Image 1 (cartoon, rainbow, N blue to C red):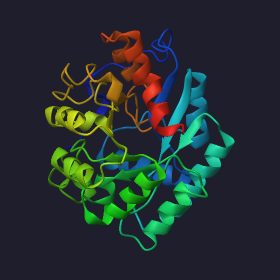
Image 2 (tube, rainbow, N blue to C red; image 1 turned 90 degrees about the horizontal axis):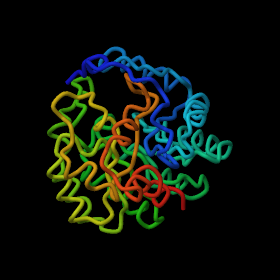
Image 3 (tube, helix red, strand yellow; image 1 turned 30 degrees about the horizontal axis):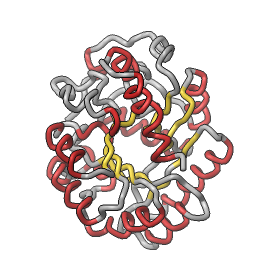
Length: 294
């Protein structure tokens, strides 16, 4: 799949939806060292969409902070052996310099010393969890190579954010992500690791009914809204029974800065949604802090 540039939708004015929403935590913000960011942007230019915000890590945090976002969950992912420790130390340093940032680490499952990398991330580096990207890392969410990662995260009481949905799917990943990923695999891994706090981004698009059922079955499963409520992917809007109906198990996230549209498009949908004040606060603030700020 290659997403249409701009999604066929106009870019809304930025910032107008922040007012009156209460405190906001963005649970899905990408942060990388400059060279890694630039390599990712080149990949998106060639295979995916046109990224609107070409901001480096310090600029990302400044941009969101200036627009009223009070906490940012920082995510990174490793695509080759040996990169994860570099990314993890970068995230730890960034988190130490910016108290509004809740930084997560990463590991490439199956790489040499993977368990030691995870222990360093969740121990001395004091990172708030881990990010796994099944598409980039070419691994199914229930692959046995991930079991030590899940076990260490659960033992440390730290969540794992895993891009395990089937979309957006790009041939350039070099693997059939729709065969690799699915709600069934998430069910299997949570049965194996019932104490693991797991976050699946993008509301699990495009398996909404399956993920709604998983929320009922697994009390430690969470979904984030990233791109799924932005109206960017035609024909893939979540049903009302999932969003906003499951607000107490959802996290607001954006994928910033690697998005092709105005950064606050999700906030517009949340502002228009039929949410109680309690549900809105849970979605925008409480749920993220309960998972990552502890």
